[in-house]
Image (cartoon, rainbow over all chains, first blue to last red; front, side, top):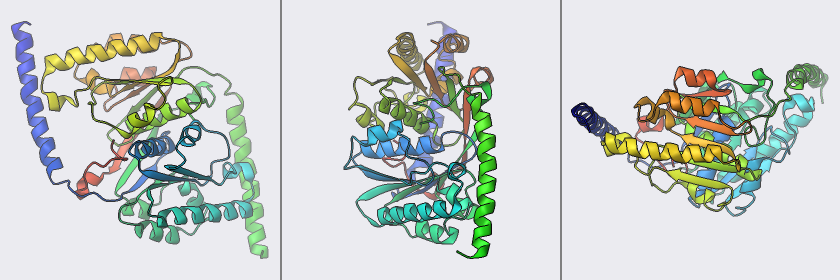
Amino acid sequence: MTDDESDINRHHAAKMAKKKAVRDKILADKTEERGLLIVHTGKGKGKTTAAMGMALRCIGHGMKVGIVQFVKGARATGERAVFARFPDLCVVEASGEGFTWETQDRARDMVLAAGAWQAAQAMMADSSFRMVILDEINIVLRYAYLDFDTVLAALKNRPQALHVVVTGRNAREELIEAADLVTEMALVKHPFRAGVKAQAGIEY
Amino acid sequence: MTDDESDINRHHAAKMAKKKAVRDKILADKTEERGLLIVHTGKGKGKTTAAMGMALRCIGHGMKVGIVQFVKGARATGERAVFARFPDLCVVEASGEGFTWETQDRARDMVLAAGAWQAAQAMMADSSFRMVILDEINIVLRYAYLDFDTVLAALKNRPQALHVVVTGRNAREELIEAADLVTEMALVKHPFRAGVKAQAGIEY
């Protein structure tokens, strides 16, 4: 090692020690464990995918997860094939009709949304679940297929230990205010623009 | 159903039919299937989590995934417990030293980064893999533990069918330019601010 390298390394160690001290201090008073209300919103990709990643983590820790898909269809997805291997730890309810522009039937969409919300409420009331994912519920709320205030009240009154993950574009401001953890997935670049179609393992 | 309701439903059906037509047109010329270079960057949460969600999807489709963790440690994560159940479809290489501010040892970090990069290159050259995830490589690149141009060239020259997912804050502009799909996870709200600590199923 040259003298220069040694200097860089010493400088680096000092800088990292300082960084660690700052970080340790930040983390020292983070002692609370409780169920979080988590929101993934924005126009970018990764909202549902990151929620599925959280489901995966829970399953790995032996924590039971419920997933309610509010607008996604009956299409076989990769994640569902894996989740099916853990029937005691993962329950999936899919309203099964695809996006609303596929059905073009508002009355029917509303009935399905109400059914999905009922399933979600049952999961949230069942203390065996540690996480409930309300996938794309923001879309359903945007079309007013469900009453926003009713949903928000139920989310706020969830059991203390329960994590609830809400996904979908256009999360309402009151939902963001009520949440503990909010990430906006912003679209920087999308392969559809380059003529590439939706592919297994990426989009589903 | 009231007349008003019928009107709303008819209007909705017409609007959705139009939306579907626009969408179908957009999708019609998306016929290409090829390996994508995907980047998850930004200060928000969900970068690694969404990459793990993509790994989950691949596994569910029977596609083999390699995951190289460049700065994350040997800590048992939920996802790894699940991935361990699919040894033929998921290979995880963890450099095993935690974040750089934990080690405070630049020389050692560089050796580990070089080893992780070697593992990554081997996976990218092995045609049995359909996806390779380079988790937190952006951090390693930022500290210049690896030569950026070498990494970028390897990513650009990856096999045609291989998806590569790159995660971590501060993705370099040249990497974003080379990528097919880029999402910036923006931090809107973080529970650490409310005194809540990192929890199983959420952070790991």
